[in-house]
Image (cartoon, rainbow, N blue to C red; front, side, top):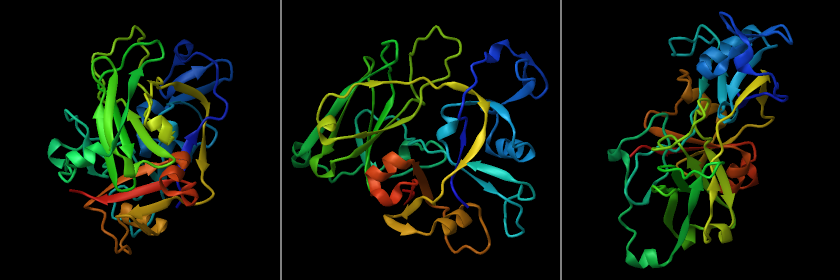
Length: 307
């Protein structure tokens, strides 16, 4: 089992809205084909469509192209109730914690659902002297047309800790980061799931892309302004892109076998690994290498204990 991604190599320039509706999606008169709307389907539905027809034209979002998935084939050892069909599991990778009034230093966590405030575990070991040894990472987030973005989430990530904050009404943010955690390459993830008071006159606006930035020491210690990129709709022939090698999997900071991780993820009987109390992050190549080195160039999963 290897990590896979959806990919449209050559996006079609035809207008989706000008295509005629039919029971499966929209019909393109130029190429005489029906395009299936993947933006309205979940992982298992997408895999089922691809398995039934490898020559598909579809509509998907730029966000869907970055989310990894794994195909599960029929196997009597699977405990899953839908194991009699080929299905897919979309592994969501956003860092999702509720807003706090200030940046919080918490153990690195990730879950398939947004956590509650009770799940935030503030590290009380950070005292005044620690803050004096900190670097202030600050900046502003605006849209492509210059509008400020309020309540976007900025997360500074290390293997063992994260520091998060949200943009204010004017789109500005600041986080104090201990200097000893700042490396030559640093990963910052910006997500937009909870933005508020955002004005747009574009009816097609569906949100902004969650983006990982790999920043230098100088960029972390300077004002760093960010342009939010709109989630794009892409249409065209889709293919499943497979990595030649498997990602690195870290559980509590230690490497574990990728296939054993997947067996546990899909509840196979032969696994001895329990993921019930684990939470998961996934990082693609550039940010994965920044976090864990060249060994993680095919991706990085981080598993941590739930608090």
